[in-house]
Length: 167
Image 1 (tube, helix red, strand yellow):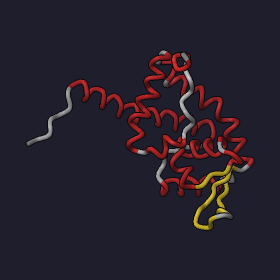
Image 2 (image 1 turned 90 degrees about the vertical axis):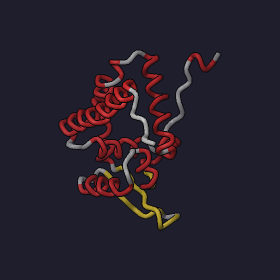
Image 3 (image 1 turned 45 degrees about the horizontal axis):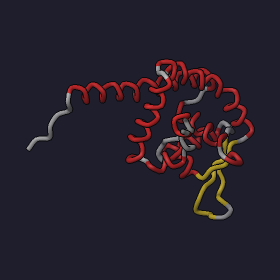
Image 4 (image 1 turned 60 degrees about the vertical axis):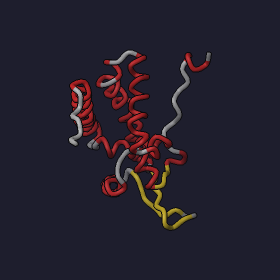
């Protein structure tokens, strides 16, 4: 028995989602390349390191939070190391694990780039959504990502409380 095709609504929604997944990263890549000579993936690695305690994270956790595969992370980290934006070292408590650490130069890059990056994300995404749609986007993205990579979702900050949550 053949598997049924997507309904017209599902097909349109899927095509729109593929378009967003293709063109939004391309726009952010172009912005970050102009701003700092970085790809979006490279910037996410630096950004997550800047948000972590001591600006140091195990590589496996960094891969999950930056939403890249471990092998892709190794290539990204090698490029960022050459630019002296981060360093790698063995974990002193477990030699099997590697730590990535943001350097002072890497922290400066994030500090300089973050305001423009946030403005670009607002311009490309959130200016087109009302607050209810932004909340729906968060819920939909979490619902889709959780079965694929619950480890990524688990490392994110918890959802912010909304006035409706407090009543």
